[in-house]
Amino acid sequence: MAKVTEKSLKARCTELNMGPLRGTTFGINFERTGNGYTVELKYRDATPPKILAVDVTAAEAAATVEGAAAGAAAVQVAGLDKPEFVTRDTFIRQAGERCPKCATKDISPGHLSALKGTMTQQCLCQRCGLSWNSIYRLDDYEAAVAVEV
Ligand SMILES: [Zn+2]
Image (cartoon, rainbow, N blue to C red; front, side, top):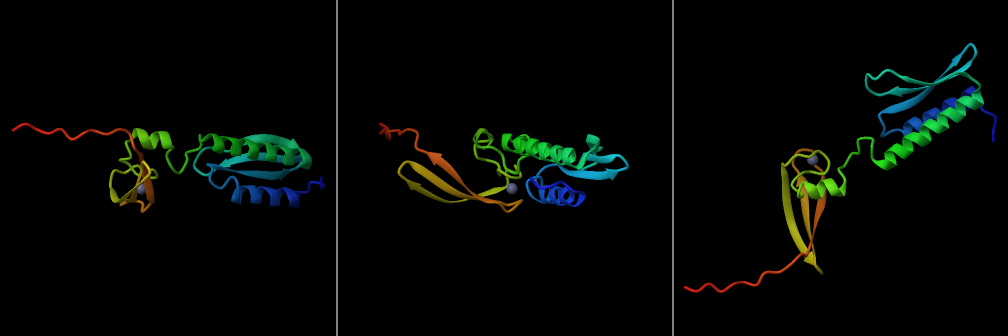
């Protein structure tokens, strides 16, 4: 592994902040102090920064940065970090009546097409402009009942 320098640390933080951490609520920052490096999570809102390591060596700072980035990636995969779209379960619970992105009911259902027991309906959100397909699956049939007059 290459030697960790202030420059390589900075490059790595920038890479992470612009890449994997871009969709999260925070970025990783470090500062050169008199006794080494301080690593902290800087939130994008008013949340005070969380100090992860104080006065550590460059190599320790790099390890802290990687650990925090891996943790953030795991949180994102687990879906705890305010995902942009609702999950499939939530969409179904809302009976497909809400936009999966902005949750408004102001959606335009469009063209329906049925194929082999699956019906697809193109939908368009009037608020955020998202378009998606709502997918319906064949469930049952009802015979038409002749009504005696
Ligand atoms: Zn929407």
